[in-house]
Image (cartoon, helix red, strand yellow):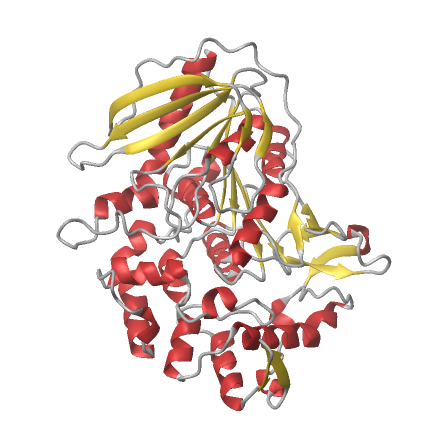
Length: 506
């Protein structure tokens, strides 16, 4: 969890101003009239002007507050889908002055559809009218316990439908309508911005609602949902079946050894494995090595190496974990929480189900059942983006290759499937890989500085990005992330400068 929180800090701190068109005229009073959101009944609308200033992230998150937020009009729309009995909240924040004519949909994370208020504040600072929705499932990122099952213990498919897709379109419709009422004219451009669950939401928008957004920034997207969600338990299942629970210290020893062995394949010693496909470190090479864990000397055994081999290899039907990736998030005693809850609530429909006792057979049963029951609902794997292309939409995805939460190979596989179906897709859909970067941000690799800005430039200026400028979180190095399938190659000079690299085929 500390690693994930660190990534969130990094992601927030990486926000950069993008160029903006001239601001619109002064906004009217903060008031919104009747709204029409097809397929829903609007229950209430509240609006009130806020002074701006400082907006905090939720307590417990080590993320600095958003400061110097301008005055904004805060609108809350509550709606329901007739016959469903849900109650969905849509929040819309609109800068009182300095509106750029842009609308931004803000994505969520984990089991929450909604972005934090501070995320809305970041958008308002950039001159966007911004919206987010809770989809009627609340804002708990860590667990779906409050909404996954109905009173009879069955999966609440209506709320899962909201979470998967339906509420995304409702938010876009309501948010744009509020924006048009408040400013007296519709937004000229609309953008989606999200990572992880928010990245999946972005791709789902392109698949199901191709006219909702002109541009989509879908970072480390949680597509292939049912495969990666169950796949996140693989490291836990291997250790259970092999009766050998490795400590974080032992997991880190294998991670460090793999980086030591493969770091210089690209001729640059920066603790980054630029192309994980070329790292073939054998975990058995560490057998007999003595390490110190919490003051105790431990000797790496063949059984330890076998556990790591199987984790790296992966289960049938999904990808293993890259050598050099931090396994502590998924390899701990209780496994990865998102995956554990997916199996508990949506597969077993039993909140008490103990994932720490899952066998290989249990794993494959859950893996297959998840695909059969939920792929069409939340898989977000549809490779047909023809309607989004016809609408003139543009989508950028970037994904860290050291992501242990959502393996980057799933994003690459999706990009390949879209290409096989639609031919050369670089005219509207571009993918960039970030070597050495963790989930959404963090790690020792270079993180994109302003991917949303690249989407804006592509949509509004026709400047399709050939690379994404990036820098390490400590600011010591810059890189230009390459357009997939190109990879970065060192050509000489200062290894901390992006100018010392070029993009070539691997």
